[in-house]
Image (cartoon, rainbow, N blue to C red):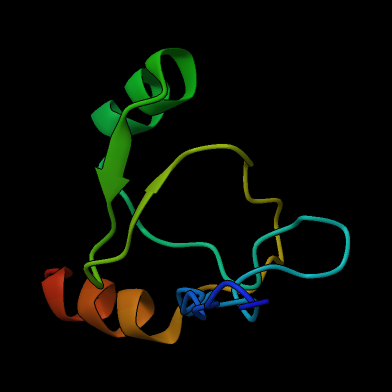
Length: 80
């Protein structure tokens, strides 16, 4: 009797370092204000200053960790 052949399916790489254990993002990103409400209501994706693309699901609280790349870009945009 012949056994059927098997193949291995590669699992896509999943980044788990973006969220903490309670589903809170590791970093919060800078996003244009007009995109935040649209994303939260309609589920559309937003693009942060650093290029990260995601739907808005959580609101940052004062003192929340900010993406270092977004923060650096934001400071570069400020008028002195």
